[in-house]
Amino acid sequence: MRSPVTARLLLPVLTLVALTATVAPAQVEPTKLVGPEWDQGYEVPRVPAILSARRQTEVVNGLLRDRLDNLLPELMRAAGLDMWIVINREYNEDPVYLTLVPEPVFAARRTTILVFHDRGEAGVERLTVSRYGLGEFYESSWDGGSADEQWERLAAVVRERNPERIGINTSRDWAIGDGLTAGLRQRLETALGDLKDRLTSAERLCVRWLETRTKAELEIYPQVVQLARSAIAEAFSNRVITPGVTTTDDVYWYLRERYRELGLPVWFQPYCNVQRRDPNADTNGDFLGAPHTVIQRGDILHTDVGIRYLRLCTDTQEMAYVLRADEADVPQGLKDALRRGNEWQDLLTSSFVAGRTGNEILAETLKKCASEGIRGTIYTHPLGHHGHGAGPTIGMWDNQGPTPVRGDWRLHANTCYAIEGNIKVQLPEWDGQWVQIKLEQDAVFDGEKVTYLGGRQTRWHIVR
Image 1 (cartoon, rainbow, N blue to C red):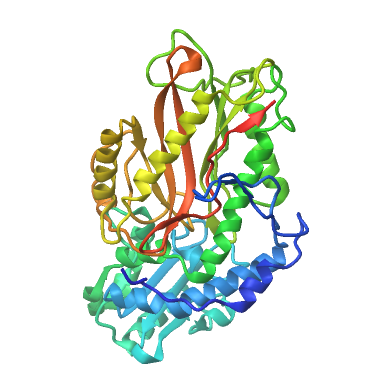
Image 2: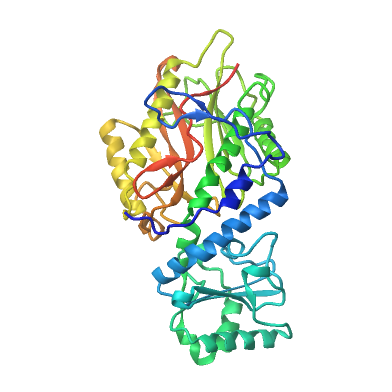
């Protein structure tokens, strides 16, 4: 399937990414873990370069200009909209608003109104009808005044352009497409008068805008993912863990503090839990989730983290093993189990076909798992400006059947996903006890194949 957008690669963006940064002197070259048939498995042992706040602003704004100039017109036309109006107020921002405005904007100011008008060959006109301007990204069409005057000016802008279909952010099913509040919609309809009949939901545009990654963003995304993975490698090592002393709380708070130290905001609290040998364990291979669990030798560790950098989110789960004093390496059963987990990932990603729905991908993968004897659960989700992003849902941890609406969304090229799920296997070294291998690695679908953005885990982290 042809890519939905061919975005030009911004030379300034790539130049900035390569600049000397604040944390590491140079880009980390990943350590390859396998032989000639590379399966995308590698470690990120050191923290990659991180740009200064000033450089990050320049990169983000370069990416935004590319998206507004090259991506938005195509998406508006595909959605059949002549105009798109995004309205929000301070402290109650629309989910798409901060993806449409330049750095260093942190919030809406008073009532902020963005207007996008498709003029055909002349491109999409970008206006703001707001008290505060947005620089060169949006032409200001109002000089200020009362709230009533602001709405009157918006109505005049619309009437002057006379669009047939005006998209607004209302949706029954998509939270990211439902950012227009009831009060603001009432004000808008009153201001437009007879033109209010031209209003229609912009949910499709919202989803496509948020899920689609440009060529320039995909140049940067691998390093964003490597930043997340590098901190996990630190946390799952003797640099952080002393068996018999360190608790699971210590590990996840280390991750939280480490990301803060690096200037990388998390979008959920990192966590860490353990599995250990237990003759009374059930067949679910459950993790010990109790607070303050002391990590012991022979434990299996798991973590889940998500960061945000350059307006792109990650979501990563990886596994570690704590060697017993009489062990020099991870038990073969665990190596086989992780390899089985990688096979599960391959079955899932091989089911990614452009145009398929998330529910169709789920159903096909579950059939493949059954034929291969893999006891797996799939809960894969889109990734991008939001951690749980816009696009097709592929299974839920508590529902391995169809997910209405979000699971019916079709797979498009240049979209990213957290390849998330788990398998359960019996571990010979633990007398056949069931253990759970929980994996989550970030990847891009280019329309033909899936590629892991920052590699994937194919070898256990080891705490000695």
